[in-house]
Length: 307
Image 1 (cartoon, rainbow, N blue to C red):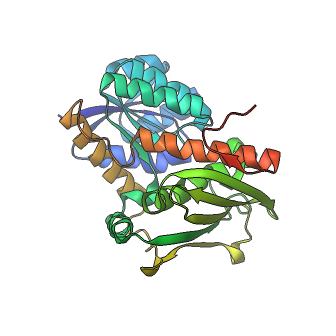
Image 2: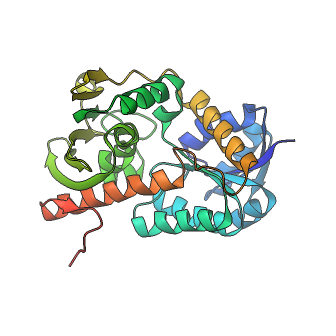
Image 3: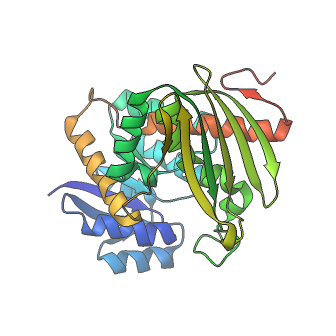
């Protein structure tokens, strides 16, 4: 039998993506589910024929790894408890709302030699991964532009009632997806400027190490007719456009399970997954700086003192 994986969370994403992929995966054993609502926990457990847990620590104790589909602040606390218990981690993005929280998870997984994968959905489509590798290898990129104008909060989507998405907006929900395909090509971010626009759109200018600059426009409240997603990279190598991800959420999450299983099998000392907790922490650092830049209406340098 494969790695025993427990699911923490009972929302739409947990039901329709994580739960479905775990139940169908041939190399993992879907061992049980815990959620903050007992009735929803039982319903999800019954749907997939697994055990329902009323205590998250009891589930953590019974498994080898946890998949987490909870609001980022709740996820961060649960992930740290799971790591302290020696469990591998399959996390959703963003992994936390603060670098203090994401850094604690990264440090604990590192100390214990645990495997970790963060589910940046686009990064688990082979075509996207191949494009990022080839584009990064080409080098000579002066800049990039990313646009993610989504209508998740302006329609009756399954995420429209999500409290944390309504509070934090596109910066924290789809910003991680955007950064997941910018950072591998453009490199680490050293400074962030942010401007708030109509329809709670966040506009970011990111100064990367080496001098290149990228821009992002992010919102969850675009009108359906104005929804758009596009990423372009430009420089001496020409212009490159990110291809559409060829995998939907369930097969992409199945690929994330594959990568967690592979990393766990290699054991301590193996190279970290490109989408491991270290990368998740890097993404949180950029988001945290962007939120501070919005608040201060000023450019924020990553790692700079807040004094």
